[in-house]
Length: 455
Image 1 (cartoon, rainbow, N blue to C red):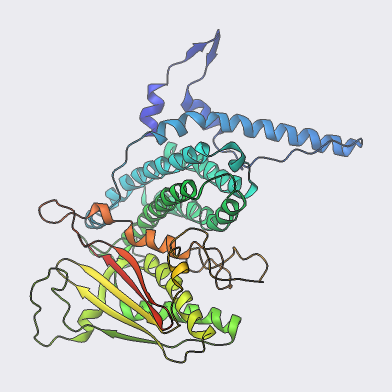
Image 2 (cartoon, rainbow, N blue to C red):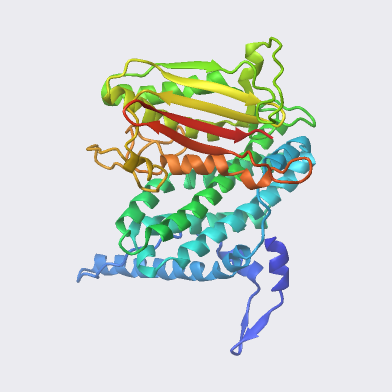
């Protein structure tokens, strides 16, 4: 925790003959900086007004530089912290323990987790070549992390002590944190495309894999505390000791599928003046499928097989990315048949598999090999800034169809985020894990298999 770190450096220290103030005092005085983005320097003109503006810019730059220097020690401290992987079981455990006392302690832990992840991202940015970080788009993302580091450090010094303060904390700190990182992918995508001659594809992939996985974890931690806070204050359903007080909810899968199909069709109506129908079916006897034991062939209520506990906004993102590709293939190849979605659920252990089947003539083999590569897109757009796509969380994007090349790789990261944290009863990691795979029959169509764990 930042407090324990501050205590370790609390006494006055003398360096080069001058007395330095303790970190806590400096943080409390200066951490409230309004913006950490670097102010570009311009040549001063001969006029008095321009000279005044130039002086103000210099002063502002120096102030920001001091704050950047001030953040060095906390960034180094938190970047070295070891964090356990954020698992589905941990989300359930937080839900079961939810009380008015627990939520206040969880607020402190949430800030600590976010500080560690945030510092690790800043460290990784700094490990990139200097010319790469100078790219305006990548520098924009870097500055966003500096800004949220400042905000989180302030929150760590003033944790909520009542439910009312916790509500302000969720609105002021966590909601603003989520908003700040909502639109970083377009600029990051643009930046790495512009500096692709300075880095190898292997270096870019390694950076983005870790960056996007930790970005998913950061947003999940923030969303979890927000949902827990809503439950404890009565803004959403609360069940004492229940598993679904947090971000994981029991979802009616046909409703989730239809919602996302409608959202993508709305965009296609604007782009193509056409929409694509979907047809949903299910395997009626899937209960023991993944355990490989004989299925119970007794008649079951079909509706009982259509509910699954999961994080809805994760599923939203994945489905929209897959639907964008499938629907576009149908429209551009003039296929009138619906896209077929088959639901299969296993209860013991808890797994979900969705198969999204289209008849859009398939994917050429040379394209299929790169389908999960970052910044690889099969879509050519003349819509201006093609980076503003649906490749940001649902509800926050523009209305173009594709073009950034992060949709499927990021969807794969969403599916695999819990893979190393779900042991079986003997503590052994299972062979069956979350995955996103594609099987294409070139000239006919494509099957996308989404498999994920529920608990």
